[in-house]
View 1: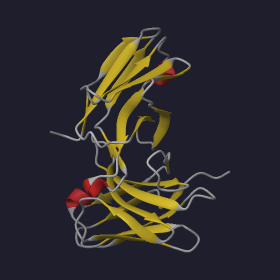
View 2 (view 1 turned 30 degrees about the vertical axis):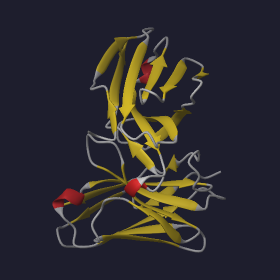
View 3 (view 1 turned 45 degrees about the vertical axis):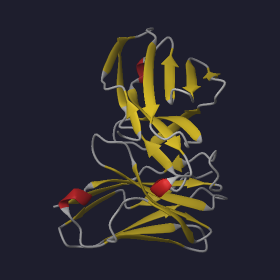
View 4 (view 1 turned 180 degrees about the vertical axis):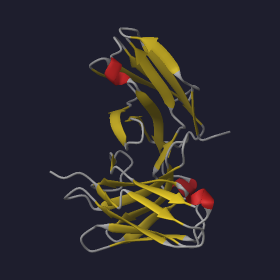
Length: 114
Length: 113
């Protein structure tokens, strides 16, 4: 079975541009979460979606938005890119949203903002 | 105080050594606990969940002390392939985290021949 897939794998943008990152969860998983990992830090929670509804939002500005589609895939959008947005963006899927649910991560999108 | 704090690394150990990582978390409402492993420039992968009674998976043993808000990971008979960054992770339905994973910064382990 395919794991969590993310696209693109690498992306270079300039300040002020916007970017869309895509994620397909593991088949049968209905929850998708997005995390940002800056070099040298642990991943930081951005959003969680379950059954196409936002279930959680981390401490990120409104420039960050996301959505989940009927097939449970998801997009993360970032507007007005800043240099500090350069990071590895990870998508994770799980079957549901319970506290004991295990998350499985995709290999991420490495975003570089110049 | 950070929500999840881990031992600063790196840990450089010889093959066959036993190494222990420690982690503390700040919010007593945290409900679930995990150790993830992350290889350089790769995604985090679940190593093991951590249960109150302690649990073991082969050479790996995890312990949880809720009273002290302390989590540990013990690796016995270290292998070269254990070289990675180990992330302590907690999850709880509180505040802005909305029940999602909170990661420590990670502790880097290098196992040398």
